[in-house]
Image (cartoon, rainbow, N blue to C red):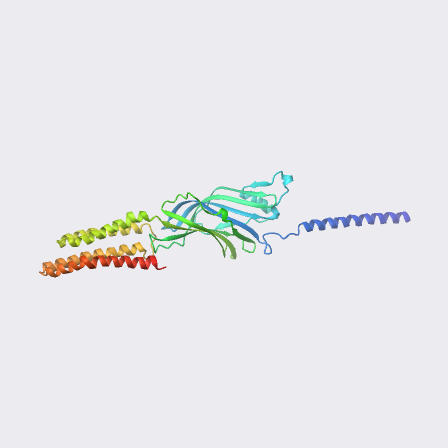
Length: 356
């Protein structure tokens, strides 16, 4: 019996040692995994977003959108994606985006998906890749082309207007799980945008919170920039011909034959109609007048009034009151016509260009 009891005690001791060692080992393994997971309300995943526009392929004023070729960059670190570089034999692994998403899903990690908030067309991705460092740092880069909405266009000061353009990237996940911060060094406008009609500058990165696809507050990074027009085009193609037409209208007063005045003023009236159609073709059907619309409509009315005025002068001459007609004609040459146009231009500048 003594031998049997001794054997039982030895077996029990070995079992205690075995289970005790196993428990210690399990506790150590658990302690190694006790770090707070990222992508949770307690520890949101921090993602850096960079937006760089290399080209502006078009600006459609009537549709209020623009086309762009854009390089998007996203950076984040998730320890769940870390790997043993000695086992892999390198510090980095390179994935295409779908493969990275599958890899992250297999490891129980999340990939910070995003949408372009003001996207209007399909996004054609030219190139995309993601690099994963051994410590879980991910850098994702894609180059794509797409059409973007520009709903902030305001043409009241046209053609002296400055328009606002945006490229808005919004997180699919709520801000409790994924937060954004801007990558200033990887954001901005390229040196050769390829846009001739507009001068684009004043690029800046903006961080905000909007209602995302989940219906909850989500982080947004937007690249905002401004565009204004090359005024030389409008000076040569619009304002210079308008000045010539105004000068021709004033020169009519030096003709003694009222009938000839009426014929020339009628031709000017048709030119203003053509001007109006040509300019309106570049803009959407607005519910307000632009600066150029106001000036053109006033010139149209002045030219129409000029025809009526010359008809009245001819009537006075035919009725034998030629002296009265000449006196009115003299007032029109010296005061009414030039001061009328000066008042129109002055009011337009004040009401449309100077008043915010």
